[in-house]
Amino acid sequence: MTVRDEQPIDRELTAMTSRPRIVRAVKESLRRMANGDAGPAMAEMARDLLTGRIRLHDLAATSVYSGPMLDGIERYQRWESELTPEHRQALREAALSSGEQGGD
Image (cartoon, rainbow, N blue to C red):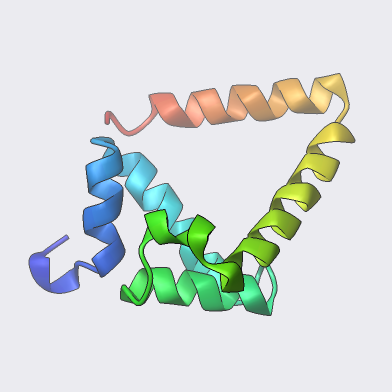
């Protein structure tokens, strides 16, 4: 990535982790969210993060986003609690396997 291609979120993510693969995964998730995959409120939040209108560390203190974030966390927890042990193990193995690929 060149400086010209860099988005404001890149500096924040890079400061949080030295692993480029994690930075790419978070940005890809934010892009999907920005396209509406997680609903309109989360799409707005993702767009604001990607364009630098808001910073990651400000999210929890911003009432505009705290409600949708908590809703998303609750949906994830509900989904995760319904996984079978086999499915949970398969997801864990897939995540570990993808972490071993790519060399960073």
